[in-house]
Structures are given as structure tokens and as C-alpha cells.
Length: 115
Length: 112
Image 1 (spheres, each protein chain N blue to C red):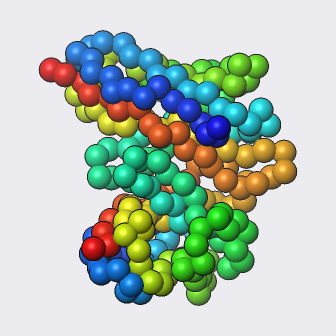
Image 2: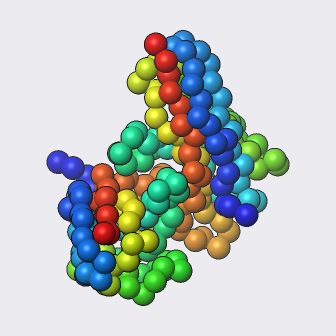
Image 3: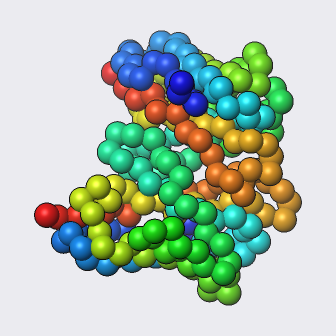
């Protein structure tokens, strides 16, 4: 009964490929996020979705596109992968917009390696 | 300037020691403060929220100084299982932006 689950856990792919990472939460939360953790362990938000609407879109390349079919799912699609995209991508969810006060629940991460 | 800055570490302490981590944040309008713990190759997990009056959870004590924009975490009687990276996290401002900013973390190793 994983609260926030991501697949795949590991992803190795060649430059130029297109790949997707899936995320699902069974907590009934309204808001979901994608974070990127680089080699220096710095966690930076990429996107957040609230009730299927994008509410934050940081300055990430447009090769990255979040897709949310419903509030329990937030997938991340990446086009034309580059070496610099190698990182760990974490999905997270929070109860609602006010849950900056309660923190987020993270998935176990997807380790992406672009070769 | 980074939103959240932490002691770089690493901290290597013997079992039973007391260790303190510090963190500063840049946005004076921030409204929420947390400490997260991240084990090697795992996801961040909420350790505790940090309240203005300071708060304690077992061996862990968190303090917030809004005037200095400074947050601390004190761990007493360190256990081997406390070995992890501790992330200082700051969120929210008066515009209601729903975002958490993470520090780069301080690595703790508790030695037998």
C-alpha cells in the first residue's frame, strides 16, 4: 500500500530518446509535484499540479511535459533526452494548496541515466 | 543567493553524542519550516515541522528564529540509525505560492 508510487525505479536510455515516468498517489491528495535531484543532491521543483491544472512551472526545458489524467496521477514525459537530464526524479503529493504547512509525501524516486 | 543554505557537513559523531545542524533562509515572508531526512538512495521523508516556539520530538529538537531567519535541529543521544542526510526545508510566502525550497542537506554519520 505505497502512498506515492513511481515507475520505473531505474531508467537507462540513450540520448535523443523519449521516455515517460509514471506517478500515482493513493492518499486522496489534491496536489502533486515533480522534483529533480541532481548529482549534488540539490532538490528543485519542476512542476506542480492541483486538480489537473498546472500551477507552478519552473524554468525547465519544454522537452519536459507533465501530464495528469486525474488527480491521483501525474506523469512526466521527456522528449529528446540529453546527458544533463541524468538525475533522480521524485514525485510528491500534498493534501492541498495549504499543505505547505504539512509537508509533502515523496515517491521512492526514478533514477534516470542518459548515455 | 540560494533560498535555503545549510551547513555542508559531513558530520561524523560517535554514538551517544549530541549534534546540531543549522540552516538559514532568504525569504523573510516564509511561513512554513521543516526538517526532512533522506537516507542514501531513498526519498526524503518528513522528520518534523518547525514551529515558532520551538518543538521537540523525542531526541530531536527544532528551533526557529524568524528575526535571524535561522533554523536549527538538535539530535541528542545519537544512534547509528540516525545516519542520513538532513534537509532543511522552507515554504510558503504571503503570495500563497505553494512551494517548498530544499537545502542541499547535511550528511550525518554516527560511528559505533
